[in-house]
Length: 381
Image (tube, rainbow, N blue to C red; front, top):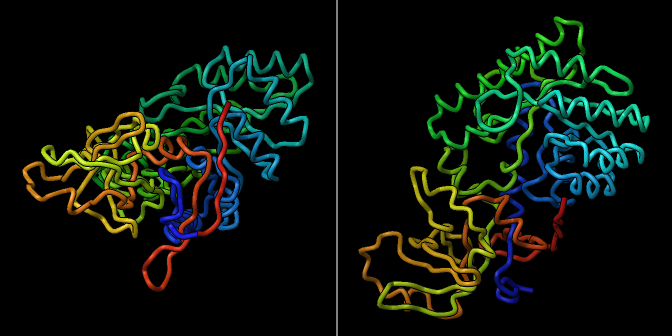
């Protein structure tokens, strides 16, 4: 099969770029002397997770228990479920542990900690729990300087429950774009996580693991003293949001959506393609950044950047227009019906989630892409 034989829209992964991204991150973590635990929610793909582990990653991070079940069934046993645990999900987590999965769960409040302990005592399930720390006010986590941190730690030392460490996610790094600001946030993330671990240890509570991470801070950190592991996810494919943050270029983006020109609105300067927001997702993450890419940056079928972007999207229709609205070029002549295009996504996680599988694209000496294997991905919670 050739690229033109694919039914569009289709999710493409350029293996050479993906491999380079994996190696870059792993080498950086090796230089720091810390374990790297990739977040596999970006791709939800067994083949990609195994490539990350083959490169040197130790364990994985997941965002759903369905992910944990799928990766465990594929032979990956060291798994951190990085979403706050609540009582209704404990039975699903316990089933994985009973099967031999080395599953770690997290909590950031006393109510969750009490529910975990109560379930453990009632069912004799040995849970390892990490406390989520808020290091940037972005989302979840307990204040590392609060009394609540110590209260949670003490609760997680009862029965068959073990306090395994602390973890954090500096998600506000996505709002930054200057190297100095990214480095400062990476240091803040490290410092406050180590502070939380130090406070727990000072009260004779165990804290073996200090886990930090986001793609921007992982690639911006200058020092990781006191950290035992780093987590990151979108780095494996990258996206346009990350180019605006400044931790990659468009040449690093390994995911694109293949689409076909199906019509034109010449008076508006539009080409219409068969990839709408059902293919690209509704994520407009670049809208408030330095460069608004609309619903995605347009490339030709070989991956060469064009001066077009996806400026609008309906469910199954995308609108392609020139990045310069005053351009008078005839778009129907430049992008005739049947033209294959690739669209680079704003958010790789959201765009990948629209497809049941990835079509691997291999680079060739001639510069034209060749099709490789098809890698399935999965859904659900």
